[in-house]
Image (cartoon, rainbow, N blue to C red; front, top):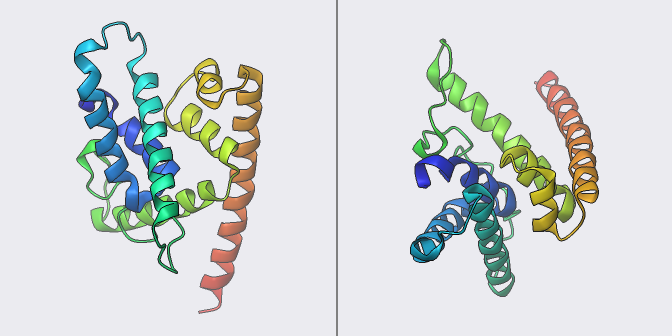
Length: 183
């Protein structure tokens, strides 16, 4: 279960709670899944089931964080070097095709931090639709079930979210290019 769906669940967790808290939510997700696994024989789509658990654990995490003091710098998205490909075996091999491996990891981490920050700027519904469909690979029918709306509304939210992500990332690149040109 973990080897088959771990990477997808981790991407969902990172998108829903941020990179810094994703590991905890990921672990809670699989612990909860393993607790009910012996009685879960009627589940037909394990990935959707695990993503649902991850979403519920993310909601629990957010509820807890509202009760705890938040550090002034905490935006929910980490800008540290623990990005998507930073040696995380649960995500599979980064598999870069040559060149300086360290440079590839650093570049991937910087890009990952930018994408996670952009995802955090989307509306809640758009972010979840993008994460569930594009990162977890769930069909719109299942995304709609998770969001509590129709497949058409889920498709629209994912489409609007992707459009907004493109704009946010383009703006981020423009700012980055201006900043690097000033030095």
